[in-house]
View 1 (cartoon, rainbow over the protein chains, first blue to last red):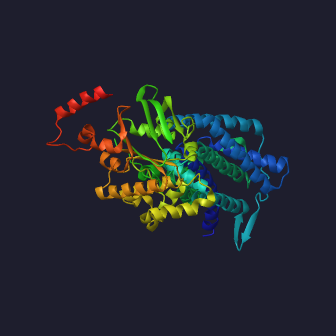
View 2: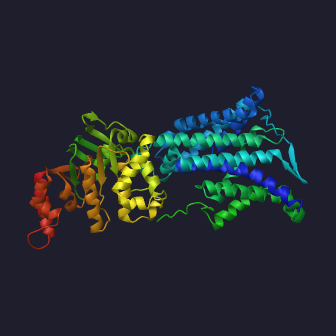
View 3: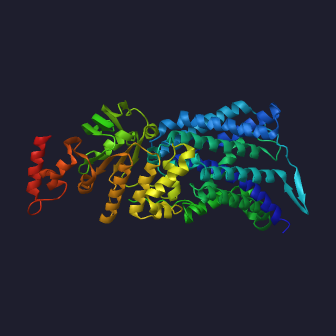
Length: 298
Length: 261
C-alpha cells in the first residue's frame, strides 16, 4: 500500500504529460488526417524556448511559458503554410512522410540552438515535493497534472464552445461541406497546427521540469504518445486523455512492482510497457478505446 | 443577377465536362436546371461556388458574374460572403453535430450578433428543426436532414440559393413539402437555381428552365413552355400520349436531339 499510492501519483503525473502530447497529435490528425511525426521536434523546441525566456532572459516563469507556447504556435502555423499546405489533396501517406522531413529539419534547428549542452528550463519547482500526511508528492507531478490536463481541457472547451472551434470540427468532418459554408479550410489547418505546436511546446517545458535538465535527444519521449493515441483512438481527445493516464499509470506501477514480483523480466521493463499495451490494443481493438471504427468496403 | 457565360470546365486537365454553358438567374426568380446523369449539372454548381478545386476541376473559359462582378476567380469562402448559398447533393449535413451546431456552421461568416436572430428565423421556417435542435443530426429522417441542409445554407442569408437535387431519395409527400419550402424561401426574396432530375417538381415552381445534356444547354425556355414541349414531356416528365417509351423512340429522340444541339 505504501508503494501503490506514490506509484499511482507518479503515473498520473507522467500520464498527464503523455495525454498532452497525444492530444497535440490528435488535433492535427483530426484536422488533416495526417499523423504529424514532427511533434517530438516541436516539443524540444518548446523546452528550448522556455529555457531561453526563463533562464537566459530571466523573465518570470509563467510569462516565459506563455511566450514559448506563442513562439511554438508561430512555428507550427508557418510549418503548415510552407510544408503542408501544398500537399492538400495529395495522398495522406505523402503528407506523413513530409512531416518526417519537417521533424529532421526542426531537430537540426533545435540541435543548433541547444548545442551539446543540457537545457535547464528554470522551473520553480525542480525536485521539490509536497508532504501530505505520510505521503510525498513531487511538485513536478502536480505541475504536469494541473498544467497538462488544464491545457487539454481549455482546448477541448475551445473546440466545443467557440465559433472557430465549431468550424474546426466541421472541417475535420467534411472539408468540402465546410468550404461551402464559407469556412476558410486552409486557415483551420494552420490553426490546428498552431494549437498543436503550442501544446507540444508546453509538453516540452513539462518534460524538462523536475530533473536537472534535458538533452536534445529527449525529443524521443514524445513518441510515447504513439501508443497512447493508438490506445485512445487516434481521432478522440477524450480517448487521448484516458489512454495517456492509463499508460502513465501502467508504466509507473510496473516500475514499482515488476522488480518485486517479476524480476526475471529484467531491468527497466517499464519502458517497454507502453508498447506492450500498443500491441495488445492493435490485436483487440485496432481503432482504440474511443476511436471511430473505420468501415472500408472492398 | 447571377450569370454564367460560355462556361467551360475541365477535370484533371483532360476531361471536358462543360462545353460552353450559359445561363442566368434573375433576381427573385426560380430557375430550373434539368438533365440526366452525367450531364454536368453538379459541375455547373461547383463552378459557381468555387468548389471545382476540391474535385481537381478548373474553369478554362467563360465567366460567372454576380451583378456584373466576376466571381469565378474567388475562393469558396469569398463566394459565400458575396451572397451565394449552396445545398449540396446528398444533403451533406454534419451528422455528428446537433441540429443547432449544423445551423451555426452555416452562419460561420455572419456577424456574431446576428446569429440568434437568424437561428430564430430558420426555426420559424422549419418548426420540425426547432423541436429537435438538440438532437444529433445523423438521427433525423431524410426529409428533416434535407430541411436542415437548406436551413444551414439560409443561415448565411444568401441572395442566390443553389439547390442540388433536394428531392433525391425522398418520399413524394416529403418532396411536396420541400417544394413548398423552396417557394416560401423564394417569396422571401432569395433567387433560386434548382438542379433536379425530378423535372416535374422543378418545372412546377420554376419561372425558367434549362436542359443540359453532355455539357451543353440544349433547351432554354420559360418553364411553362418546357412543360408543354413534346420532347420534355416524353423524356423528362415521363408523359406520353399512348404506351411507354420504347428503346426505338429513345434512339429516335437522340437522333433528333443531335439535330437540335
